[in-house]
Image 1 (cartoon, rainbow, N blue to C red):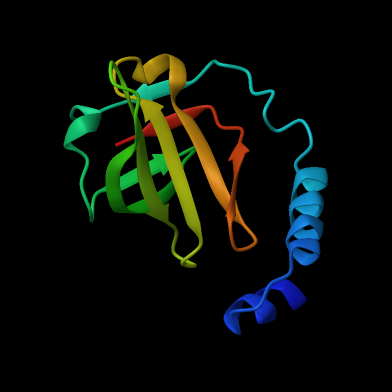
Image 2: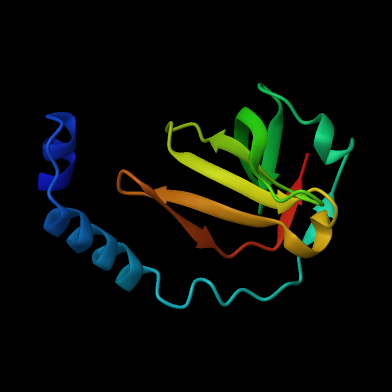
Length: 125
């Protein structure tokens, strides 16, 4: 892909970036309309998840790379758990620390810069 090559060389035009974003959005149109019937099976509090831990999403195992505060909103924190699979593909679990069950979402890195929300029904750690 031309965008990946341009990025590696440190040169990426706004036009190329917009084109890549448009292609990703088209591919995942409607992905943000996810039904909120998520089952969570937790062996420990989500705040205790750390690098090296394993998390399964819909039966697929991922390894935790990092767990951090994505955005501190003052009264709540938006958290991110960086994951990777056996093929070294990147994913994220995002949630708000004061309402995990109602806000947990799963994302896949598409292209070089954009995480796209993916539907899922079960997460366990």
